[in-house]
Image 1: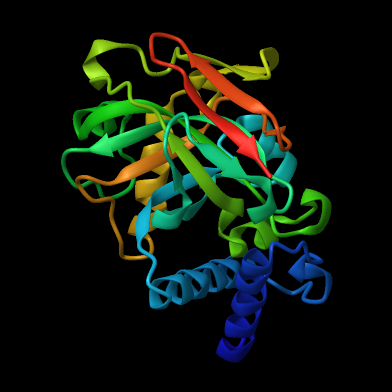
Image 2 (image 1 turned 60 degrees about the horizontal axis):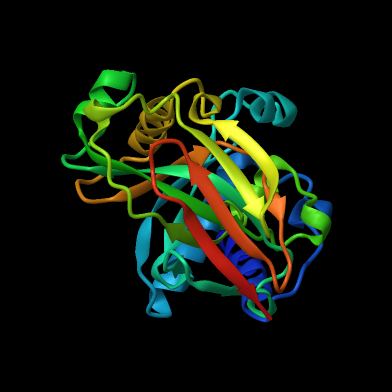
Length: 261
């Protein structure tokens, strides 16, 4: 796909986020769009955001469950980026008027103590490079109508990145089994979704390994100090103004936020 078209589609999706407006998936008019093209559009969106004065908070993984990968007919997850303006304080508020049709997912976040790069990294390699693991909530908010999209669409849309709420339970990877963490999403005290961290590719560290491999093929690497969202333990749950979302993680403090207009 030509560079001018790549830029035009990136501007289109970026403006949809700014306008808080859902749009028709871009593959509807561009059925030839490939995954490679989609990452180029994502790169262009990142450039637009950086030029606007935002900074990258860290990478995030998507499609990290075997069932979801099978559904989307892919053999590895996808990735995007979280920006500084997306961060919400634990216990803080999220305004639905600033979003389109948000959903919440329970995640685990990794903080690296040394760089990671290359392919075929083992779980042990990743855990050895990890300083802390802690709970987080990702708010996804696809810019596409009714959350309907193909794989290239969601990659181009920066994997629906919108907001992130970071927990405060920093755990050393050697102190617990990070593949056996359960999480339950409560909305107004009612349990809405449950999952365990083994749903993230069998082990969340494998998600970090796959991200390192995908970045390596692009000549990039994961850096010490980066905060990386490994993927969702649970299904994504829709919320509305007035809701109170609290997520309980096994062996960790709750992570929560209020929803306002």
